Structure formats: structure tokens, C-alpha cells
Image (cartoon, rainbow, N blue to C red; front, top):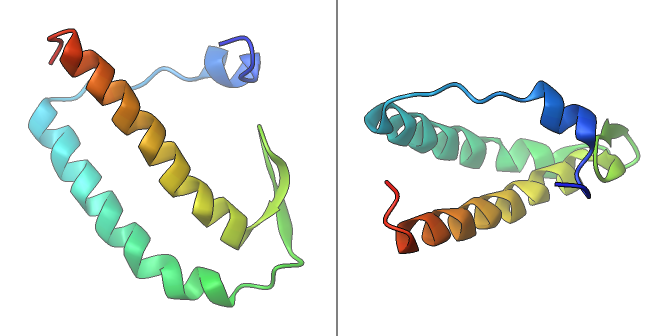
Length: 86
């Protein structure tokens, strides 16, 4: 975790939830995310916000990071499944 900002790592403690709740929350997240795509595409690309790892990025760039982040979690999930951890 050395390459990830240490303050974020230190401040983040995930809530432990039941698997069914996590799956339902994830499905709701996907629906909500997809519903925001058209709005995000219309945003002024000159307006930027600070991302803790990537610096100043606009809404379209931020939105595109969702897919990258989800692919990262998919790889983590596959590694855990390979270890027989549910």
C-alpha cells in the first residue's frame, strides 16, 4: 500500500456487512451510476476537483475512474475466490 496515499488508508475502515446486503447495495450503486452518465457527459470539462490520488480531474474523468476501480475489485474478488475465501 506504499503507493496509495497513507492518510486515505489510515482513515478508511470499511463497514462489515452481510453478503446479501453488500450485493444489494452494489446493484443499487450500478443503477444509480448508470443513471448519472448522461448528466456527467454534459458537465463543463474545465471545472475540476481534487482527487486524492490523481490530482485535479473533471467530472467525466472522475466518472471514468469508476470502471477502473470496479475492475480492480473484480481482480481482488477473483484472487479471494481462488483462495476459497467467501
